[in-house]
Length: 137
View 1: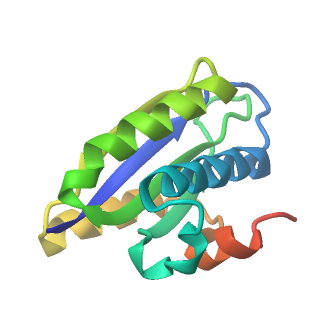
View 2: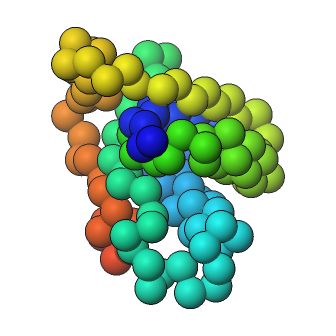
């Protein structure tokens, strides 16, 4: 069964580049696909997760961007995804914190998640943006 999950990544580094953070996540998710689907993972976009990435700044005076990522993935992949991606991201951002939550299949829960993710007026990046790296300014 496919589940929607909210995955949050916060590197806790001052003046972190939003582009570098997304690029690192993009590289990491591609590594995950390479392990799961094989070296020709890019030939199977239908087996890749639907992704929406929302960038937010912290409430602190210093710039500490973090990501909220909504993914649609098979329920049995959630744990493997979480441990793989969190481990790889920790190599780039040693003080990173991360969390994953299943989004309940109710309208009210989906509305809460999207309202929370859309608090800031920043672009939303999806699969095609990651594939073509349109998030690079």
